[in-house]
Structures are given as structure tokens and as C-alpha cells.
Amino acid sequence: MFPEIQRVLYTRDQIAERVRTLADEMVIDLKADLAKDGHTELDEDRVIIIPIMTGAMIFVADVVRELPMKLSLGLVAVSSYPGESVRSKGAHFATELPTNLGGKHIIVLDDILDSGQTLALVKEMIAKQNPASLRLGVMLDKQTDRTVDVHVDYVGFEIPDEFVVGYGLDYNGYYRNYPQIAVLDQSAIPKR
Ligand code: IMP
Ligand code: MG
Image (cartoon, rainbow, N blue to C red; front, side):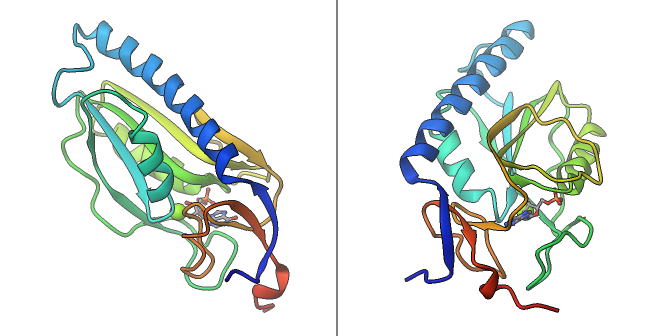
């Protein structure tokens, strides 16, 4: 079914356990923020989770179901890997950013931190709306030279500088549905 997978880095069970721990950390932070504002987790219109599509969709689906509070989702799409490339070509928005983020508690979630350009761009644009709090989270932190330095509050796993797929991460649009996090075999990546 997935012959081009070279080796699995994290299994479904390892991912699920890590996601629960990250979500617990988010709940602690969000509840503290809300309490500072005089709100509770049942109050409406305070917390917005922003997945960077499409890679973050599976991670976010798992995370938000571990957040027992009133929240809404605000999608944003950023493109940096057109087609068959495995290195960022520079991040740019492929959708409009939600416009209702002022005064809200925001957590932006992405599948992976690589050069840092994607999260730095999204953070900068959201900060312009003056949210009450703004945190970033990624499932994977690739150990590579960042072209942009960006602080991430929640990290699932640190991984070596290899191209990975599964659990939402794609190569050329495919493998997002592979349920584990795995290294793609070099033979699947055309040399150019
Ligand atoms: P950055 O802007 O270079 O930090 O890259 C972040 C984006 O690149 C992520 O949102 C992913 O969509 C994509 N990306 C980076 N590394 C990988 C990888 O190993 N596999 C699949 N997608 C990746
Ligand atoms: Mg992405």
C-alpha cells in the first residue's frame, strides 16, 4: 500500500500519547490565560485554534478533541513546497487569514517546523490583529538550520533533517493518510 516508506519514526500509539500530553499543556496555559481575563473555559468566543492547512489537519483533529473547552477553528493555508520539491521555496498565504483574532487566545498549529518561514509569517500576520495571547505548536521539529528564528511553545517530537510523511505530512500531495510518521525513501523523490 505504501511501498515508498523507508522507516517509521513514530507509531500511531506514540503519536496519540504525545498528542494527549501536548493538549494537557495547552489546557493549562489556556485556562491560566482565561482566568487572567476573568473568563472560564466555558465562555464563548475566547479561544481560536488555527491549523495551517493542509499538513496540520490530522494533528489538529486529534489535538482539539483533547481540549475540553469552548473553542473555534480558524483555517489558514500557507504554501511553501510546490509539487515535487522537498525544500521550502518561501512561504506565502494561499488563503485569507481570519479577521476576528483581536483580543482572543490563539494557538497556531502546524505539522512540522523546518526553515521556520511558515510559522514566522503566520505569527507576524496574526500579531498585527493584537490577540490576547498567541502560541505556536508543531507535531515535529526538524533539526535543521532555520532560515528564520521562531519560538514554538509546543513540540511533539524532534526529528533529524530528513523528509518525512504521514500523519498529515505529504510528499507531492500524497501520504497524508499514512497513519504513522515515517521517512520517505529517497527513491520516491526525483533527483533534479
Ligand atoms: P518551513 O516554512 O520551512 O518551516 O516549512 C514548514 C512547512 O513545510 C510545513 O508546513 C510542511 O508543510 C512542509 N514541510 C517541511 N518539512 C517537511 C517534511 O519533511 N515532510 C513534509 N512536509 C514538510
Ligand atoms: Mg505546511
